[in-house]
Every structure is written in C-alpha cells, then in structure tokens.
Image 1 (tube, rainbow, N blue to C red):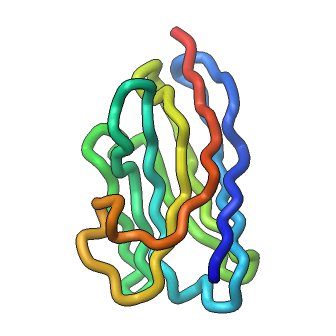
Image 2 (image 1 turned 120 degrees about the vertical axis):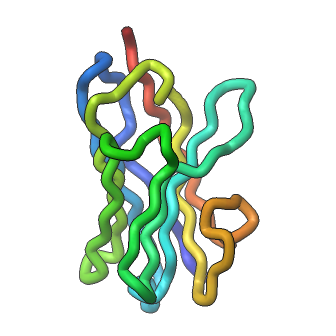
Image 3 (image 1 turned 60 degrees about the vertical axis):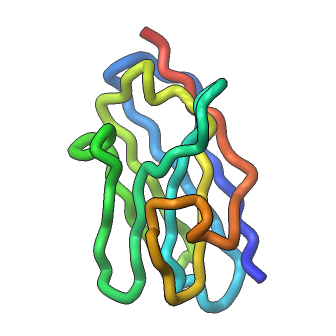
Length: 125
C-alpha cells in the first residue's frame, strides 16, 4: 500500500512559479512510476507529467512542455513538479499518482493505482 500526500499549491500571479511536492509512503517508492495530473472546474482530470523508474524517462503534456519539470528524490520518497511561467489556464487541482511496475499508457488515469488528495493551484492574470 502506498499513500501520497501533495503540498505546495497556492495562489500565484501569471508568470510566476510554484513547486509541488508529493510525499510517498512505502519502501518501494523508487520502483514506482510517478505521475502528475490536474483537474480544472468542469473539466476532466488530465495528464501533466510522468517519471518512470525503469528508464528514468520523463514525459509531459504538450501544454506544459518547456515550463514544467517533474523530478524525484528516491531517498526522500518524494516527487516534485516544478512549474514555471504559470498561466491562468494552469489553474486546477493538481494530483500526484503512483503505479507499481509495470505500467502501460502512463498518460491515462487508469494506469495509476494510487492517488493523493490533490492540492489547489490558482494562477491570477
């Protein structure tokens, strides 16, 4: 069983930055694929970024590529999402997700079996 707790959300002006953290319990964190998703009011939850353990690869949605960076510190059992050049359209509840190996279709919600409670990010214009 893995528990995920997000933190770091808040209110920021357009062009600003935030760093989200996802603290995970469990001894096998380093083997998990970590993902970040977001859900804006009235919209479906969408993929933002993922970090796979097996290949060390990172993946991003086109809408955040070049602005967001996913990283992880396996020693601290923590994943991060550094968000720069934030836009009002980035406003959403951001969720951390995890999946034990193997993982297929990392960009889909169904690929993950553990979720955090979410943290609100609001970007003002």
